[in-house]
Image (tube, rainbow over all chains, first blue to last red; front, side):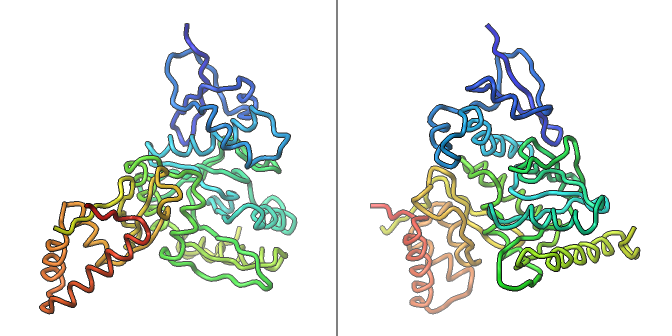
Length: 253
Length: 94
C-alpha cells in the first residue's frame, strides 16, 4: 500500500514528508501538496520528537512539536541543493531582501514593526522567522518564504528576492551600528542556520553556503535599545547599500 | 612513532579566506561545533589527513615555512597538537 506523502517546495526544490502525525500537515497551511508515493525525503523519529519537546511550551501538541522538529530536518535536506534555513526576520525593501538576525527574543520583529509603523507599505515580510537561503548561480543569495513564520505568523507565501544585506542584532544600552567582518560573522551565523550537519559532506555543504553568503552581502552589527531611532539607522544603512547596488540612484522611491 | 588522527566528523573548510573547523552532530558535546584556525594549523591539519606522523609534521612545517631551527619547528607542531587535542579535534594514537 502506498503512503500519503506531503510535498513542500522550497526555492524550487521539492521536499517530501511522511508525517508521524497526519494533522502536522495543517501547520504547513497552503504550502503543502498531497501525493501518493512509496518514497519520502524526511520523516522524524519518535526519539527526535522527544528531543524537541523540552524546547516548546509544556502544552504544545504533538503535531506541532513535529512541525517544529521538521525545521532542522528540512534545513539538512535542503543542503543537498545548496540551500538551507536561516533564523531571521526576512523582508523585502525596494526590491531587495534583507535579514534581521540574532537569537530569539533579541528584537527582530520589534524592528520590523517599528519600520512598518513609521513607513507603512514600504516593506513586505517574507517570513518573520525561518527563510530559506538559496545560493544562485550568479553569486547572489535569494531569500524565500516558508510556512515557519514565527509566533506573530508574519509572512507571504511565494515571496522571494535577492539578498542585499544582513543585520545581526544585539541588545544594549545605546544604539550603534557598524560593519561586521566575515571573520566575526562566521561564529554567530553558524548558530543561525537551523541545522547542525550530520555528515562531513553536510559540513562542507553548509560551510560552502556560508562562504557564498558572507561573500555576497555585507553584514552589520546593530547594538540597540529597540527604539525608532535604531530602526532609522537600519533604514539609512539599507538605503546606502541600495545606492551602491543600483549604481548612482539616490536610493529613494 | 608518535601518531595522531583527526576526529571523524570534523572538516576543515575555508570561508571568506578564514580557515574554519566544522564538526558534525555526532561530536556534539565532544568538541566545539565551529572554530577558526590560522593558516599554519590548517596546513598541519591537512598533513594529518594525509597520514603524517609527528616526524613528518615537523619535516613538513620546516619545508613549508623554511624553518632551520628544529626546536622552533617542534614548538610550532607541539603548540598545534596541544591546542587541537585540548579541543578534542585530534586524537593521539597508541
